[in-house]
Length: 271
Length: 253
Image 1 (cartoon, rainbow over the protein chains, first blue to last red):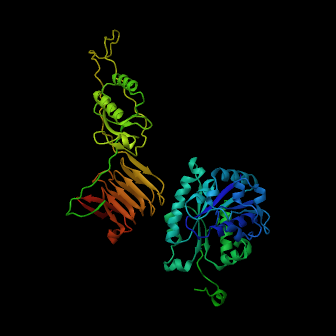
Image 2: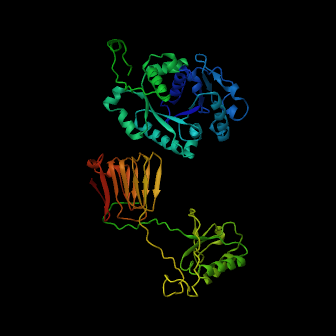
Image 3: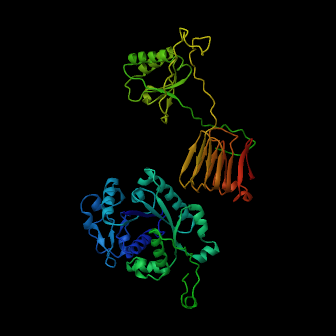
């Protein structure tokens, strides 16, 4: 049974595209057929993070408007054969997305893949609402700071009202993914603690991804962080999160910023 | 909205919700008035004294036609309180005012006046000894117990709960950027981070209760306090708000 997952947040720049790529790659490595879809028409980034920007011929808008078939637009990942990408257009904008077109594309994707991960644009307008419309599961990406939390709360409200599932009266499964978590700043009180965020948002926690230079490195290389360095802290956190999406119960590890002696001597964090 | 100021006596506009009966006349008016008369015979007294709104959207008529229609309705004891859907050129002083923003509230059936009982039931032994002609039923408006809205999920940012009919109870928190507008009191079994506006239709007895006060704004019957004006010792505590005269009072629960 295919599952459509939307990665959304409300606020921009919190890690939606990074998380879409990382979770997609982690699920695909586990053997499932995964397609990641970029809904950020006009400001596409998923193709960059996946390292496919030089192979884009047709995109989501072409398929929605009937100019190309889905198979022509899908880009297979070179590193993982069960992972595919449906990129967004860079020259058009969100007004070219139609509800019927998206519904048709989602239907076609459901027949081919086990997981369809939709990378939502920031905001609460048409692009975001179309990305979440057909979702069965939602991952709400939040940074542990006040404006991100309030925007995530808003998007949770929209998930409960603007999705097809909500309109049918069914429950849409929501998960919280806390990204860019810096334990030192949380301890100092500059950032919200995990309990504070959970108290405000009141949805189950999927994972805590620590702030790390590995994420930027991976996106510059054009690889999802779970494929580039599977031993780094964020990669491990994303792998655990993917396993939790599959239903496994794994104890949550809250990164605590402790570093080994080697790390203390040679790994000074730049201010 | 006015701030709590005991010296001045501000004039306050209050909101009130009524359910109006809407009649939609059809051309030709003569025929429609005849049908109205038939209805009036069947349901005597239904229109008596009740304010009626006339919906003339889509009906082609002149100012004179409209004035004549209203005069005819007056003869039948139908008092027009307002007109909906009229072109601005049709209205003016002397005619009922324009009504806008009405929301549908279901169809209303005119109750049938029961026919007076004429003969004594011969074989009925258990019934009343006297049989009286049944009087015309005048439906008296009964005062209803205050309805109450209970919400079991948290209120998310950007959501707005509007319930002018009575109290609102929330089993959960109210997020920053959300608001609750109630005609009665507001009870929050959780943290209030947004806005709570109680007594919105003019009820000075309404109160606001919450288990943890982090509110952005509270208001009762038009008098409001923002987070800045709330005493710091009440923040983060279980608290109730009520109105004493023109002052919005707070106390820890």
